[in-house]
Length: 321
Image (cartoon, rainbow, N blue to C red):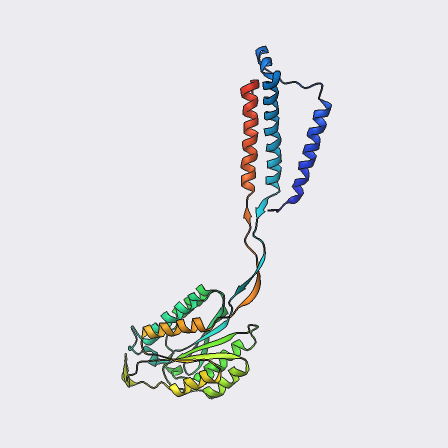
């Protein structure tokens, strides 16, 4: 237990000293006001002395407890070093028009968003950012530990406008690396999901992966789409599935990570769960618990003792308040 205002405690020895001084000075002049002579019988004798001692004891305790309450006692657990898991993660999501394909229900993009949302809420201490890409890349959310903000921004992700339609995987990796390269975390990860092949941008995906490797950044890649040769996209009809698995595998291998193929919503959820289990790291921090104020209990005890003291005075000495 500790005190927020410990200076008030100085009044306890002052009060005790005053009580001793008053008792010494009035030891031969001690008296009580009574309402009737018959009450004197209750004052003298062993019973009377015990009642007086009891009354004064409760009064004394009430003052002591009230002073302690003013000092604001509170309880905190002992500070201790604990290990927590911390990783900086960038989620890079393909938002080209092909992500509207309906081989995932209701479509690829919505299935990816739902799985990514579950992944985010399962991480407890990591900083996570969100990058979306088509022909160009956009930072939807910088690295943050505010998962409510992150999931809200994730829910707002839509496919890119037609003028930005395309799949620039190399550019997406380069921009994600740029967000992570100055991070002070020893564990940096990019989770890149695409349903196509690199067809835009001036940076080759494998070259971008090599840059990521130089900064000790792992890139887990996910190819999203069924094994069928064609799939249906609203407004575009049937289109060919063109997932470049060779490139996605090469990106992962270059950085010491893994490539996954998601053929349906359930497998996609399992992939995020596997990545969640693979990427665990620990750092040691000093943990401080929150303080619990307990002055109210001393306040209640103090007023209760005061009430008992006054009750004894009224009942046994008939003092009119």
